[in-house]
Length: 240
Image (tube, rainbow, N blue to C red; front, top):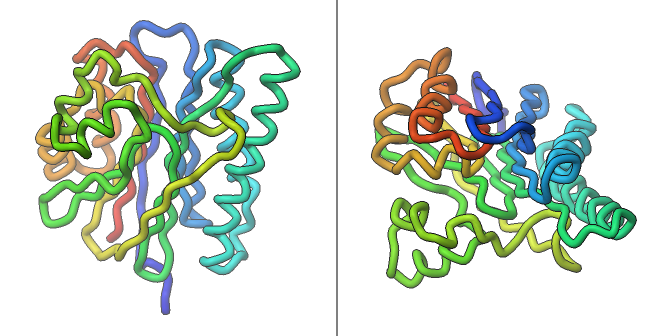
């Protein structure tokens, strides 16, 4: 089987309008066909440390690995980060240092998404948007129970309460989803600094009609126009 045909991407992270430090981290490894968004938690010098550690460890993955080995290498890098962050929190005497992670890998006309927390991955196909990940959050349980939509969940008072993160808790459970990747597919990876302000309809509209060269700036501007209360990280990957 051949690799996913031609892939192009655009990636950017913005501190937002109310934070002094960007605790998000984004990573693009086109040779490895890996893209990552990580959103740090724990405040300055902790959240940014955690997110950068995760992306830094994933960045060491060799482009020469076969696709299945690359997937395991992403998992291993995230689990390694989990252990290091826990040790660092203990050393600093800090209760919580952690970060979300949402990683996308493309290979053999398929995608694999691995994640923990509430950073998200979507796929736009034939003008229709689908959320591929499921938030590890308090409000996600309300969505799954049919009490809220994802758009409504973003406005819930506990929308920021996540139940899983790298560096938090004894064992880290990572979720994974896989599927096919076809020419024309557009993938979006983002931190909750975007999804606080962008409904499914807004995302579908912008992703459907905006070229790759400007889509990331348009999405970030959408979040800034909404208030930009958090760091905003966006990666868009097009399968040509």
